[in-house]
Image (cartoon, rainbow, N blue to C red; front, side):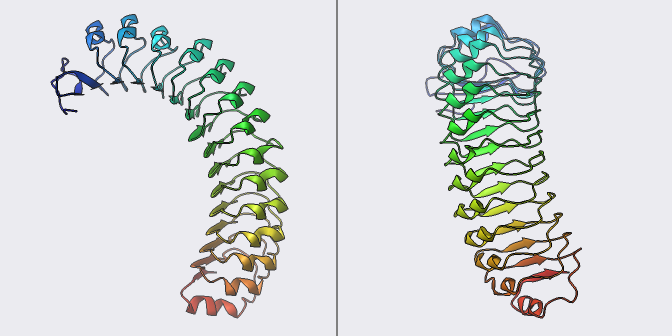
Length: 351
């Protein structure tokens, strides 16, 4: 690979091989409104980035770029996917973030080599069921659109393993079939209108990070405890009154964030989360904490701000890794004597 190969266009930068063939071409933010047809003469081109310009279409002759594997046209003016895109059968990365797309045609299923698809920040109201034909897809971003439902066929994209981003749409539910994505490691469905999760949600056994904040969830399914690989659960800004007892089965959990719910009690099983480091319970409706909380031997940060706590279990004094305990805006009076012991040990206690 030879960097900084002379670009045939003054508005683009290029990299290539030792023979002078251009392999990668970038023209980000150059305010171009049309792609010259001569670009299709770059027979060895594999990566093309035309993001943040004024494009609303692509030339049909682009299909002659048989080696093209990555196409990025983010931040342009596309209201539809250009027809030529579906002729690029070898494309692996396709990104049209921040355009004005209204729909995705069923021809999407033709792009069977796709690994990464980014259609975020458009105006999409639906996704075709043919997405199920993208069997190699591992990363899908549909965030910041106007979607109200997902096709059941999404559950057939079993290659989805790295990233599924569905934030800021209008979902009130997700299909049961989503739970077939048992290789998925990151799931984000924040800022929607979800009121519940499928009973089979725990089948997402590879999930490491789950973001569901700013929805309308009132409870979690009992299968939640089946997410045995989960390390981070971001559940803030919902309407949860508690957690299922099966939460204690999340043995690898490191962060549990529940700020701004209606949690009145924690399950006794919470003490089984020995690897938990951060427990954020501020702005809830807790009156008591279970004695089992003393089992959180890995806990470093415990935020209990603005609950209704009038007492604390003595088990908190024995948490060996605790670095910060926030008790502000509760009604604990007097404070237990062991608070000073925590402070002497180096724990920051805010009252």
